[in-house]
Amino acid sequence: MPDADQPTVVAAREGAAGTILMNRPRALNALDLPMIEAIGAALRDFRDDGAVKLVVLEGAGGRAFCAGGDVRRMRDLALAGDAAGIEAFFAGEYAVNRAIAELAKPWVSLIDGVCMGGGIGVSVHGSHRVVTEHALLAMPETAIALFPDVGTSFVLPRLPGAVGMWLALTGARLRGAEAVEAGLATHLVPRESLPALRAALPEGDAGAVARFAQPVPPGAVAAQRPAIDRCFGAGSLPAIRAALAAEGTEWAAAQLATLDRMSPTSLLVTHELLRRGAGMDLAGCLAMELALTRSVTRHPDFAEGVRAVVVDKDNAPRWAPAADVGAMFGG
Ligand code: QUE
Image 1: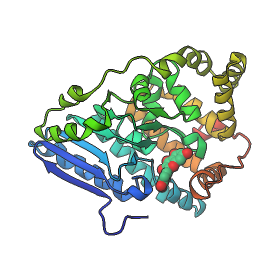
Image 2: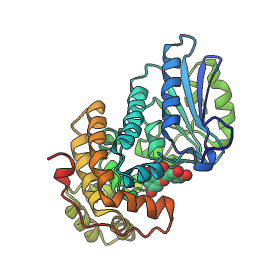
Image 3: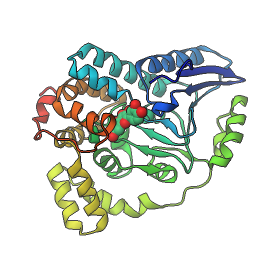
Image 4: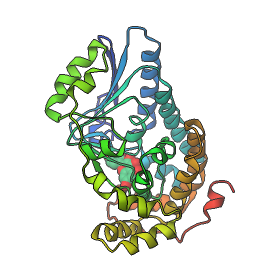
């Protein structure tokens, strides 16, 4: 649903800043392929423009930074058997994720609202991930039988302890301060200070971010860290479930209930993905993810998960029994 007559990505140069606005607010700025290609083109322009000292990425509409990727269309393509169309989308998206990581200039994401899946992918590989108290970050893909992609098979295993495995399997949603604690975000800036920070960035000094940031004391993530590490570091999905059951806390019971709602195949894929990603570089992780999109989008759980969560919104997916995950990785 394009917002009528509005370009879905607006790139401009303001002083020493290149700015990129994701502008599809009625879809919470979810990224379709034209948007991804426009972000990639803007990145290359700003990279090659000596007058640009930093890049600012933001989302239009006040509610979302970016809710993810165009999974509704990926579902249609999967049901139509259009593997080439699916490949074009994910290959394009992952190429932009990699280009952000390789950019030698500051890439400053201003995250003041929902930032999930593909939204994490266009921010987390950059140098500055600014969140407000209204930010909400997550990798919720196991709920739609996808897996944490956009290079997060590289990022998540490198978060403290088992925080990445917890986020990946449960899709836990982090508020701004929690996202800084977890390491997904770098700076907490109050929403009321965001306009002043935004106005300072065209001067070309990314150090402005730190001047508007607030310290983040240990909070909810720190409080759960021992349990997160005990349970989600257990080494296998059955061991994680057993560890959660042994905790005997309300938190652990809630995590177990969450896992029980996710695609069983997707949980196994995700666990193996992060295990492998821990020992690979970003390029290798993105290549692994791209290969995995081929088998995962062909599995019936993917169309069913997107149906249940995004299309019909009944949140009642009917999952297939767990598949052979080794085969999905290509043996
Ligand atoms: C998991 C996901 C996504 C999701 C929900 C999940 C995702 C995504 C969207 C989404 C949200 C709002 C929209 C839209 C898509 O929801 O990737 O078009 O308007 O893009 O549980 O991975």
